[in-house]
Image (cartoon, rainbow, N blue to C red; front, side, top):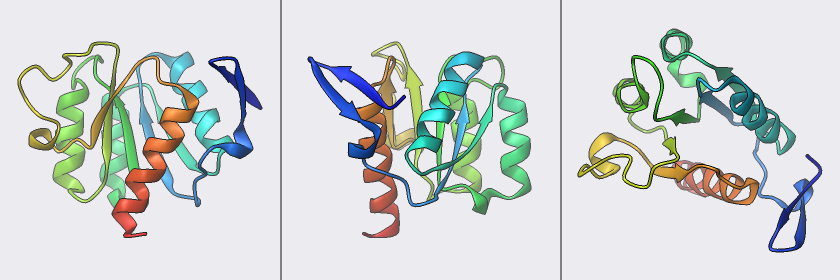
Length: 145
C-alpha cells in the first residue's frame, strides 16, 4: 500500500492527506474490503474500528459514540442496511460525518444525503486519493480548521 496508480502517476501514501489520530468506524459486510479500508486509513494516520456486521458496529458505537470522529458505512448489508445504520449513528451523533459507500449511482433514490444525515456517498470502487481527501475535508470542516 505504499503507492497506487492513477492515470499513470504513482501516488505515495505520504502524499495523501493524513489523519490526526481521529477514530473512524468502518462497516462493510465484505470482509476483505473492510480490512483493506482499515489498513489504508491506518497507514495514513487514522485509528480504525472495522466491523462486518451492522449490529456489531451499532453495539460498539452505542457504548461510546464520542470515541468516533467519522463513519464509513456500506449501503448494501444485512439488516440494518447502510441507510438504517447511518440514521441510527446520526441520531446518536448528529455532528459526526457519515459516508455511505455504494457501487450504485442512485443509491439513495430520491432522498438527498442531507435529509438522511449523510455527509456524502462515495462510489465504489473508491480510490485512495478520493477517500483520503474526502475524510480529511469532512474532519477539518467538523473541527473548524
